[in-house]
Image (tube, rainbow, N blue to C red):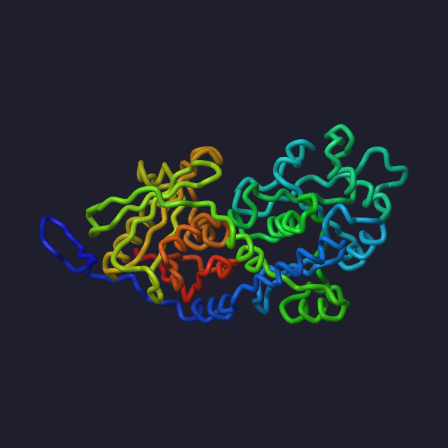
Length: 394
Protein backbone atom coordinates (compact mmCIF):
# COMPACT_ATOMS: atom_id res chain seq x y z
CA UNK A 1 0.00 0.00 0.00
CA UNK A 2 1.42 3.34 -1.05
CA UNK A 3 1.74 6.08 1.52
CA UNK A 4 1.32 9.63 0.22
CA UNK A 5 1.55 12.87 2.19
CA UNK A 6 -1.80 14.64 1.74
CA UNK A 7 -2.85 18.18 2.60
CA UNK A 8 -5.68 20.36 1.21
CA UNK A 9 -6.65 17.58 -1.16
CA UNK A 10 -3.32 17.60 -2.96
CA UNK A 11 -0.30 15.34 -2.78
CA UNK A 12 2.91 16.87 -1.46
CA UNK A 13 6.39 15.79 -0.63
CA UNK A 14 7.65 16.92 2.76
CA UNK A 15 10.26 19.69 2.44
CA UNK A 16 12.57 17.85 4.83
CA UNK A 17 12.90 14.13 5.43
CA UNK A 18 14.02 13.30 8.93
CA UNK A 19 15.84 10.18 7.85
CA UNK A 20 19.48 10.75 8.77
CA UNK A 21 20.87 7.54 10.19
CA UNK A 22 23.20 8.06 13.15
CA UNK A 23 26.17 6.02 12.00
CA UNK A 24 27.76 5.61 15.40
CA UNK A 25 24.50 4.48 16.94
CA UNK A 26 23.94 2.08 14.08
CA UNK A 27 27.35 0.50 14.52
CA UNK A 28 26.76 0.20 18.26
CA UNK A 29 23.36 -1.41 17.75
CA UNK A 30 24.69 -3.90 15.23
CA UNK A 31 27.42 -4.90 17.65
CA UNK A 32 25.04 -5.54 20.50
CA UNK A 33 22.06 -7.19 18.84
CA UNK A 34 23.29 -9.33 15.98
CA UNK A 35 23.52 -12.52 18.02
CA UNK A 36 20.73 -15.06 17.74
CA UNK A 37 18.87 -15.96 20.95
CA UNK A 38 19.66 -19.49 22.12
CA UNK A 39 16.65 -21.35 23.49
CA UNK A 40 18.91 -24.30 24.32
CA UNK A 41 20.94 -22.07 26.65
CA UNK A 42 17.78 -21.02 28.49
CA UNK A 43 16.71 -24.63 28.86
CA UNK A 44 20.15 -25.63 30.15
CA UNK A 45 20.03 -22.79 32.67
CA UNK A 46 16.58 -23.85 33.87
CA UNK A 47 17.80 -27.42 34.30
CA UNK A 48 20.80 -26.24 36.35
CA UNK A 49 18.54 -24.16 38.59
CA UNK A 50 16.19 -27.10 39.04
CA UNK A 51 19.12 -29.10 40.39
CA UNK A 52 20.18 -26.35 42.79
CA UNK A 53 23.03 -25.06 40.64
CA UNK A 54 24.32 -21.61 39.79
CA UNK A 55 23.76 -19.81 36.49
CA UNK A 56 25.38 -16.69 35.00
CA UNK A 57 22.65 -14.40 33.68
CA UNK A 58 23.91 -11.71 31.27
CA UNK A 59 21.87 -8.77 30.05
CA UNK A 60 23.01 -9.45 26.47
CA UNK A 61 25.87 -10.78 24.36
CA UNK A 62 27.29 -7.29 24.00
CA UNK A 63 30.91 -6.78 25.05
CA UNK A 64 29.76 -4.16 27.54
CA UNK A 65 27.01 -6.26 29.09
CA UNK A 66 26.94 -6.90 32.82
CA UNK A 67 25.73 -10.12 34.41
CA UNK A 68 24.72 -11.81 37.63
CA UNK A 69 25.51 -15.07 39.33
CA UNK A 70 22.16 -16.51 40.39
CA UNK A 71 20.39 -19.55 41.76
CA UNK A 72 16.80 -20.41 42.61
CA UNK A 73 16.09 -18.83 46.00
CA UNK A 74 14.84 -22.06 47.52
CA UNK A 75 18.39 -23.42 47.23
CA UNK A 76 19.97 -20.42 48.97
CA UNK A 77 21.82 -22.25 51.74
CA UNK A 78 24.45 -20.48 53.87
CA UNK A 79 27.15 -21.98 51.64
CA UNK A 80 25.40 -20.74 48.49
CA UNK A 81 24.89 -17.27 49.97
CA UNK A 82 28.57 -17.18 50.86
CA UNK A 83 29.45 -17.84 47.21
CA UNK A 84 27.15 -15.02 46.09
CA UNK A 85 28.47 -12.59 48.69
CA UNK A 86 32.11 -13.37 47.98
CA UNK A 87 31.48 -12.83 44.28
CA UNK A 88 29.88 -9.40 44.64
CA UNK A 89 31.74 -7.74 47.49
CA UNK A 90 29.01 -8.76 49.92
CA UNK A 91 25.85 -7.51 48.18
CA UNK A 92 23.17 -10.19 47.73
CA UNK A 93 19.90 -9.40 45.97
CA UNK A 94 16.64 -11.33 46.11
CA UNK A 95 14.37 -11.20 43.05
CA UNK A 96 10.71 -11.57 44.04
CA UNK A 97 7.40 -11.41 42.24
CA UNK A 98 5.28 -8.29 42.50
CA UNK A 99 2.68 -10.26 44.44
CA UNK A 100 5.19 -11.45 47.04
CA UNK A 101 6.59 -7.93 47.44
CA UNK A 102 3.10 -6.64 48.13
CA UNK A 103 2.54 -9.35 50.74
CA UNK A 104 5.76 -8.38 52.49
CA UNK A 105 4.98 -4.67 52.27
CA UNK A 106 7.99 -3.97 50.07
CA UNK A 107 7.56 -0.85 47.95
CA UNK A 108 9.91 -0.25 45.05
CA UNK A 109 11.99 2.92 45.19
CA UNK A 110 11.68 3.59 41.45
CA UNK A 111 8.63 5.57 40.34
CA UNK A 112 9.00 4.77 36.63
CA UNK A 113 7.75 1.26 35.89
CA UNK A 114 10.34 0.94 33.12
CA UNK A 115 13.19 1.06 35.60
CA UNK A 116 14.50 -1.74 37.80
CA UNK A 117 12.65 -1.95 41.08
CA UNK A 118 14.82 -2.11 44.23
CA UNK A 119 13.08 -2.09 47.60
CA UNK A 120 14.28 -1.50 51.15
CA UNK A 121 16.71 -4.16 52.45
CA UNK A 122 15.18 -6.73 54.78
CA UNK A 123 16.15 -9.06 57.60
CA UNK A 124 14.18 -11.80 59.32
CA UNK A 125 13.44 -10.47 62.81
CA UNK A 126 14.11 -13.77 64.53
CA UNK A 127 17.69 -14.19 63.35
CA UNK A 128 20.02 -14.32 66.31
CA UNK A 129 22.90 -12.38 64.77
CA UNK A 130 23.25 -9.03 63.04
CA UNK A 131 21.75 -10.35 59.83
CA UNK A 132 25.03 -9.95 57.98
CA UNK A 133 26.33 -13.52 58.14
CA UNK A 134 25.71 -15.99 55.33
CA UNK A 135 23.56 -18.05 57.69
CA UNK A 136 21.45 -15.03 58.66
CA UNK A 137 20.98 -13.98 55.06
CA UNK A 138 20.08 -17.52 54.01
CA UNK A 139 17.41 -17.61 56.73
CA UNK A 140 16.08 -14.24 55.59
CA UNK A 141 15.87 -15.44 51.98
CA UNK A 142 14.10 -18.65 52.98
CA UNK A 143 11.69 -16.65 55.11
CA UNK A 144 10.96 -14.22 52.30
CA UNK A 145 9.85 -17.02 49.98
CA UNK A 146 7.90 -18.91 52.68
CA UNK A 147 4.18 -18.20 52.02
CA UNK A 148 3.41 -18.54 55.73
CA UNK A 149 5.63 -15.54 56.51
CA UNK A 150 4.10 -12.06 56.51
CA UNK A 151 5.45 -8.51 56.59
CA UNK A 152 5.60 -8.39 60.40
CA UNK A 153 8.20 -11.17 60.33
CA UNK A 154 10.74 -8.84 58.70
CA UNK A 155 12.55 -5.65 59.55
CA UNK A 156 13.01 -3.29 56.61
CA UNK A 157 16.70 -2.97 57.23
CA UNK A 158 19.36 -5.58 56.81
CA UNK A 159 21.63 -7.32 54.35
CA UNK A 160 19.29 -8.91 51.81
CA UNK A 161 18.23 -6.50 49.06
CA UNK A 162 14.96 -7.43 47.30
CA UNK A 163 14.11 -6.50 43.72
CA UNK A 164 10.54 -6.46 42.41
CA UNK A 165 9.93 -8.25 39.11
CA UNK A 166 7.17 -7.07 36.78
CA UNK A 167 4.15 -9.42 36.80
CA UNK A 168 4.49 -10.47 33.15
CA UNK A 169 8.23 -11.06 33.42
CA UNK A 170 10.55 -10.59 30.46
CA UNK A 171 7.61 -10.38 28.06
CA UNK A 172 6.84 -7.05 29.71
CA UNK A 173 10.28 -5.80 30.75
CA UNK A 174 13.52 -7.21 29.38
CA UNK A 175 15.45 -6.99 32.63
CA UNK A 176 17.63 -9.35 34.62
CA UNK A 177 15.25 -9.22 37.60
CA UNK A 178 12.40 -10.49 35.45
CA UNK A 179 14.63 -13.02 33.68
CA UNK A 180 15.83 -14.44 37.02
CA UNK A 181 12.29 -14.94 38.32
CA UNK A 182 11.16 -16.36 34.96
CA UNK A 183 14.05 -18.83 34.89
CA UNK A 184 13.25 -20.03 38.40
CA UNK A 185 9.62 -20.52 37.41
CA UNK A 186 10.57 -22.29 34.17
CA UNK A 187 12.78 -24.59 36.26
CA UNK A 188 9.76 -25.64 38.29
CA UNK A 189 11.08 -23.82 41.36
CA UNK A 190 9.45 -21.12 43.44
CA UNK A 191 9.42 -17.86 41.41
CA UNK A 192 12.28 -16.21 43.26
CA UNK A 193 16.03 -15.98 42.73
CA UNK A 194 19.04 -14.93 44.77
CA UNK A 195 21.78 -13.23 42.80
CA UNK A 196 24.84 -11.03 42.90
CA UNK A 197 26.69 -8.95 40.33
CA UNK A 198 29.67 -10.76 38.80
CA UNK A 199 32.90 -8.97 39.68
CA UNK A 200 36.48 -9.34 38.51
CA UNK A 201 39.23 -10.14 40.99
CA UNK A 202 40.34 -6.49 40.97
CA UNK A 203 36.89 -5.40 42.14
CA UNK A 204 35.70 -4.07 38.78
CA UNK A 205 32.42 -5.18 37.25
CA UNK A 206 32.77 -8.07 34.80
CA UNK A 207 31.53 -7.50 31.24
CA UNK A 208 31.11 -9.49 28.05
CA UNK A 209 33.97 -11.91 27.57
CA UNK A 210 34.87 -11.63 31.25
CA UNK A 211 31.42 -13.01 32.08
CA UNK A 212 31.90 -15.83 29.60
CA UNK A 213 35.31 -16.66 31.07
CA UNK A 214 33.88 -16.60 34.62
CA UNK A 215 31.09 -18.98 33.64
CA UNK A 216 33.48 -21.30 31.80
CA UNK A 217 36.00 -21.37 34.66
CA UNK A 218 33.37 -22.38 37.20
CA UNK A 219 31.29 -24.59 34.92
CA UNK A 220 28.18 -22.42 35.16
CA UNK A 221 25.67 -22.22 32.28
CA UNK A 222 25.63 -18.78 30.63
CA UNK A 223 22.27 -17.38 29.52
CA UNK A 224 21.08 -13.97 28.32
CA UNK A 225 17.83 -12.12 28.87
CA UNK A 226 17.06 -12.59 25.16
CA UNK A 227 17.45 -16.36 25.54
CA UNK A 228 14.81 -16.35 28.28
CA UNK A 229 12.49 -14.22 26.15
CA UNK A 230 12.89 -16.60 23.20
CA UNK A 231 12.08 -19.62 25.37
CA UNK A 232 8.94 -18.02 26.77
CA UNK A 233 7.79 -16.92 23.32
CA UNK A 234 7.70 -20.53 22.16
CA UNK A 235 4.48 -21.03 24.10
CA UNK A 236 3.37 -17.60 25.33
CA UNK A 237 2.45 -14.18 24.03
CA UNK A 238 1.00 -11.13 25.71
CA UNK A 239 -0.65 -9.41 22.75
CA UNK A 240 -3.20 -10.32 20.11
CA UNK A 241 -4.43 -8.42 17.08
CA UNK A 242 -8.12 -7.51 17.48
CA UNK A 243 -9.02 -4.96 14.80
CA UNK A 244 -7.76 -2.78 11.96
CA UNK A 245 -9.06 0.17 9.97
CA UNK A 246 -7.90 2.60 7.30
CA UNK A 247 -6.85 5.91 8.91
CA UNK A 248 -6.32 8.95 6.65
CA UNK A 249 -4.38 11.67 8.51
CA UNK A 250 -2.80 15.05 7.81
CA UNK A 251 0.49 13.18 7.63
CA UNK A 252 -0.62 10.56 5.13
CA UNK A 253 -2.67 7.39 5.00
CA UNK A 254 -2.08 4.77 7.67
CA UNK A 255 -3.74 1.58 8.79
CA UNK A 256 -4.60 1.60 12.50
CA UNK A 257 -4.16 -1.88 13.97
CA UNK A 258 -5.57 -2.51 17.43
CA UNK A 259 -3.89 -4.91 19.85
CA UNK A 260 -5.08 -6.26 23.19
CA UNK A 261 -2.95 -7.54 26.03
CA UNK A 262 -4.09 -11.06 26.82
CA UNK A 263 -3.45 -10.80 30.57
CA UNK A 264 -4.58 -7.27 31.40
CA UNK A 265 -7.02 -6.45 28.60
CA UNK A 266 -5.19 -3.17 27.91
CA UNK A 267 -5.41 -1.92 24.32
CA UNK A 268 -2.66 -0.38 22.18
CA UNK A 269 -2.52 0.92 18.61
CA UNK A 270 -0.04 0.49 15.78
CA UNK A 271 -0.20 3.01 12.93
CA UNK A 272 1.19 1.22 9.90
CA UNK A 273 2.27 2.95 6.71
CA UNK A 274 3.14 0.95 3.62
CA UNK A 275 4.40 -2.62 3.42
CA UNK A 276 6.44 -3.37 6.51
CA UNK A 277 6.35 -7.14 6.99
CA UNK A 278 9.80 -8.67 6.56
CA UNK A 279 11.31 -5.40 5.32
CA UNK A 280 14.82 -4.18 6.07
CA UNK A 281 15.45 -1.12 8.24
CA UNK A 282 11.78 -0.27 8.75
CA UNK A 283 11.35 3.12 10.42
CA UNK A 284 9.68 2.73 13.85
CA UNK A 285 8.57 5.00 16.66
CA UNK A 286 7.41 3.48 19.96
CA UNK A 287 5.49 6.20 21.74
CA UNK A 288 4.19 6.05 25.31
CA UNK A 289 0.87 7.77 25.91
CA UNK A 290 1.19 11.29 27.31
CA UNK A 291 -2.21 12.88 27.70
CA UNK A 292 -0.85 16.33 28.50
CA UNK A 293 1.33 16.44 25.41
CA UNK A 294 -0.46 14.23 22.88
CA UNK A 295 -3.99 15.49 23.57
CA UNK A 296 -3.65 18.96 25.09
CA UNK A 297 -0.34 19.90 23.41
CA UNK A 298 1.38 20.90 26.64
CA UNK A 299 4.55 22.94 26.16
CA UNK A 300 6.05 21.28 29.25
CA UNK A 301 7.10 18.24 27.21
CA UNK A 302 8.02 17.33 23.64
CA UNK A 303 5.61 14.42 23.30
CA UNK A 304 3.18 15.95 20.80
CA UNK A 305 6.02 17.30 18.68
CA UNK A 306 7.83 13.96 18.73
CA UNK A 307 4.69 12.09 17.72
CA UNK A 308 3.83 14.48 14.88
CA UNK A 309 7.38 14.57 13.50
CA UNK A 310 7.56 10.77 13.68
CA UNK A 311 4.37 10.45 11.64
CA UNK A 312 5.76 12.97 9.12
CA UNK A 313 9.05 11.09 8.84
CA UNK A 314 7.34 7.75 8.30
CA UNK A 315 4.93 9.21 5.75
CA UNK A 316 7.84 10.79 3.88
CA UNK A 317 9.68 7.48 3.81
CA UNK A 318 6.56 5.69 2.60
CA UNK A 319 6.93 2.87 5.09
CA UNK A 320 7.02 2.51 8.86
CA UNK A 321 5.16 2.00 12.13
CA UNK A 322 4.21 4.11 15.12
CA UNK A 323 3.35 1.96 18.12
CA UNK A 324 1.22 3.95 20.56
CA UNK A 325 1.34 2.37 24.01
CA UNK A 326 -1.62 3.27 26.20
CA UNK A 327 -0.92 3.47 29.92
CA UNK A 328 -4.26 1.90 30.86
CA UNK A 329 -4.54 1.00 34.54
CA UNK A 330 -0.80 0.43 35.06
CA UNK A 331 -0.29 3.78 36.71
CA UNK A 332 -1.50 7.39 37.02
CA UNK A 333 -2.43 9.36 33.92
CA UNK A 334 0.78 10.78 32.44
CA UNK A 335 0.24 14.51 32.01
CA UNK A 336 3.77 15.30 30.92
CA UNK A 337 7.04 13.58 30.14
CA UNK A 338 10.41 15.29 29.99
CA UNK A 339 12.58 14.83 26.95
CA UNK A 340 15.08 12.79 28.96
CA UNK A 341 12.41 10.14 29.37
CA UNK A 342 11.99 9.84 25.58
CA UNK A 343 10.30 6.52 25.02
CA UNK A 344 11.36 5.82 21.46
CA UNK A 345 14.21 3.66 22.69
CA UNK A 346 13.34 3.20 26.34
CA UNK A 347 9.99 1.61 25.65
CA UNK A 348 11.58 -0.88 23.29
CA UNK A 349 14.16 -1.87 25.83
CA UNK A 350 11.95 -1.97 28.87
CA UNK A 351 8.44 -2.74 27.63
CA UNK A 352 8.13 -6.05 25.87
CA UNK A 353 4.63 -5.14 24.70
CA UNK A 354 5.92 -2.76 22.02
CA UNK A 355 8.39 -5.37 20.83
CA UNK A 356 5.70 -8.04 20.63
CA UNK A 357 3.42 -5.75 18.64
CA UNK A 358 6.20 -5.18 16.10
CA UNK A 359 6.87 -8.91 15.95
CA UNK A 360 3.15 -9.58 15.37
CA UNK A 361 3.29 -7.14 12.44
CA UNK A 362 6.12 -9.17 10.94
CA UNK A 363 8.96 -6.71 11.53
CA UNK A 364 12.47 -8.03 12.02
CA UNK A 365 14.87 -5.21 11.05
CA UNK A 366 14.11 -1.73 12.38
CA UNK A 367 15.47 1.79 12.76
CA UNK A 368 14.17 3.59 15.82
CA UNK A 369 13.03 7.19 15.76
CA UNK A 370 14.55 8.64 18.91
CA UNK A 371 16.70 11.53 20.02
CA UNK A 372 18.26 9.37 22.72
CA UNK A 373 20.13 6.36 21.27
CA UNK A 374 20.85 3.92 24.05
CA UNK A 375 21.66 0.32 24.80
CA UNK A 376 18.67 -1.92 24.12
CA UNK A 377 18.36 -5.20 25.96
CA UNK A 378 16.54 -8.33 24.88
CA UNK A 379 15.02 -7.24 21.56
CA UNK A 380 16.66 -10.13 19.73
CA UNK A 381 14.56 -12.42 21.91
CA UNK A 382 11.54 -11.01 20.10
CA UNK A 383 13.15 -11.54 16.70
CA UNK A 384 13.95 -7.84 16.29
CA UNK A 385 17.23 -6.30 15.19
CA UNK A 386 17.89 -2.59 15.61
CA UNK A 387 20.08 -1.36 12.75
CA UNK A 388 20.25 2.25 13.88
CA UNK A 389 18.61 5.33 15.35
CA UNK A 390 17.04 8.21 13.45
CA UNK A 391 16.77 11.61 15.17
CA UNK A 392 13.32 13.14 15.45
CA UNK A 393 13.37 16.39 13.46
CA UNK A 394 12.52 19.90 14.54
